[in-house]
Image 1: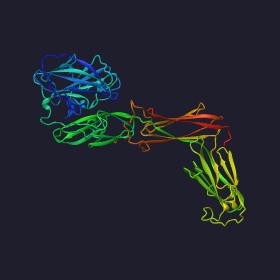
Image 2: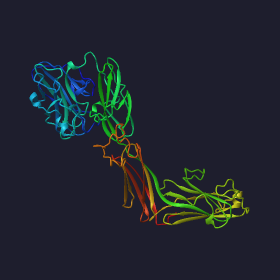
Image 3: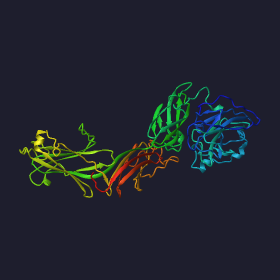
Image 4: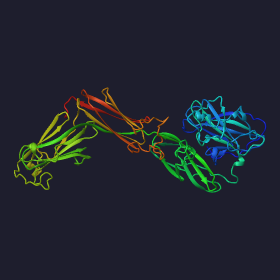
Length: 589
């Protein structure tokens, strides 16, 4: 919407004019689901206080017993048609207090073919729509106006379209320059209404500043903008200018409909200052951002940018399906020799590298029963991924040489029998008591010579630990989801055996589930500095990272397709699926 209007002078005449009505579809992106914007032609952005603040004004030439004609522009910015459009009109007289409009100021106003006389305005002090539908509009508080309502019929105004209403005002014999008529729009069915900054006030051209031009506000990017939740949005007002001076201040309101400073007046909020500012919305939302610029003459004007904040779906990271067990080693044979067990993930036997070390332990063979050998730990807890995401390998090394800084019980000399050996058992113990055992023998002479590849003496001893899933054995499934906003997340597991599991994680359990927009969260826009719920109960700010751990046991062997779907409260999803082989109970491949 242009910040200034054409310079056509209003036609003043005594005769009534021919009324006309036309519709013009808009080619704009989605706007608010409940906004009606008003404008007038001829007209311009307001740069004064009171009713004019932030809205549009129709500068009229107040001529005794004259008629002022202009066009009232009604724009349906919502996603639904307006089916019962009404225009609320307030007349404000010059005498304070209370304001009083007399027959000297005003005789009648005609919108289309509907004429409203001074006596039709009654004595109500507030906007009847506001009082019936959620509280008073800030400019109507107090005994500052009397009201009448124009009912537009036929009242259907398609979504994203504009209707032009012809208006005629018949003045009294001595109109005061302080006399004003204010226009607000609403729909009794959709509950759409005019937000702050998009209403219209007819004022006397005598009250406008003379010989001074107001600044021309501008927001880079135009009237409509679409961003993603969680993204830092840059607002740039450097395209604003002042025709006869310079701009001395830039004030930003990141939600023109929210009273961020709590004084009861949403129109005077200042959420940031400066020509370029940033803000982040943590949930999908629709909002009008207002920039007010003031020049060195004290004149000010506002521009608006309608911002649509889109939901961003969560990103899913499936970490695996795990069989859990304890891994240990038992060493017999020649005394004073050491055996080390190391478990690694994704072992590369060619380059002898791996991605991650899961755990390690060392056992030293002492005289006496093998079960009484000293060690650096009783066992290593292992969770093997049976989904095929990773591989796990046990690397067992043998040290028959004289100890150098041994970590167990100091240095012991080599046994001396170069043909001696140490039998080794690697044991996996599962939660239900089931065990898997593998044996190997390390030979002292081979370790010294390092030139024997006999199958039973290979050093180091490399064992593939990948075990299969088994019927009747619990499997631990782990997945992590990341969401850039403040959304609640639901993990839905379809196990492929006619069973499923659903786990819900609330961003803030204290406030409960976050409703989807529209109508929207009770605490949107989360992350605003004025929001008392700036963080959730844990003090966490987005992005949200949630790890879900769920156990499932299959009753019979078979191949099952496991599907995990993560959904945020606004309908964004991410999915992962894989086939899982389940054995008939023999847990070791």
